[in-house]
Image 1 (cartoon, helix red, strand yellow):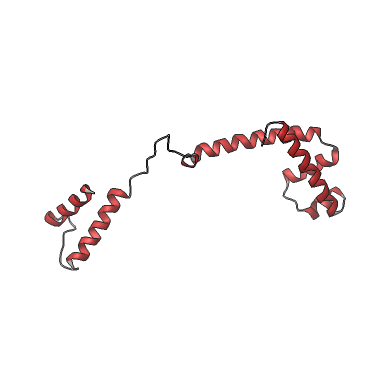
Image 2: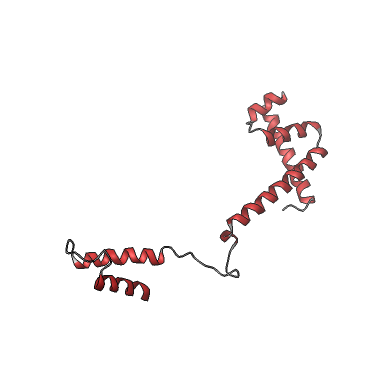
Length: 138
């Protein structure tokens, strides 16, 4: 705060190309100059946090890297799961992973009824949940 007060006081006394010229009330000019100086002094400072106090949100780049690693690991696990699935569930898994098809489109492609797709999805999700738990995923 001392830097701010000193900076404004010097401006008021000496002027700095922005000296008070009488076009506005002195109080208004002083408030505006103080606001601008405060922004210059304090607005540019980065928030610093010690590593002990830091949360994972303070490291977005690291979070993105961790997510990318997790996604690759998950994709590898899903590939392993696909190898263990019966053909019908494997086909459904492929359609769900590679294309953003809705239930109606999946039913057309698999030549089954939409409610059968829902039943197959439940079976697939149950098997995937069991498989991923066995691989250490929570």
